[in-house]
Length: 94
Image (tube, helix red, strand yellow):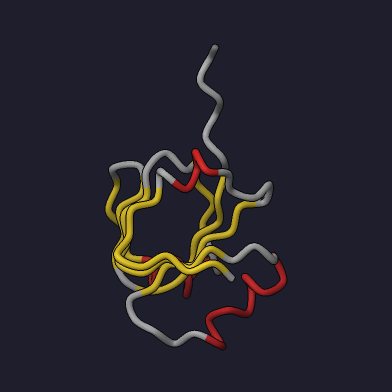
C-alpha cells in the first residue's frame, strides 16, 4: 500500500517551531501573513493547539495569549496517523 500524502495544515502563533526539519519563528509569519500552510510530515513545538473549527482558528490568538504556542488547523481534520507526527510538551484540542 502506497504511503498517503501528508495533510496540509495551517499554522500560526508565536515562538519557534520545527516543521518538516525546518526551523521557523511563527510570530514573524503570523504578523506578516496571518498563517502559513505546509504539509504535515513532522511538527515539533512546545505548546500546540489543534483548532478544528476554521472560524475559531482565525480568532484564537485573541483568546489564548500563552507564549510560546502554535495553533494548527487542518482543512480535512487530523487522524491518528497525523497526530503521531506532532511532537509537543502539551497538545490541546479546541
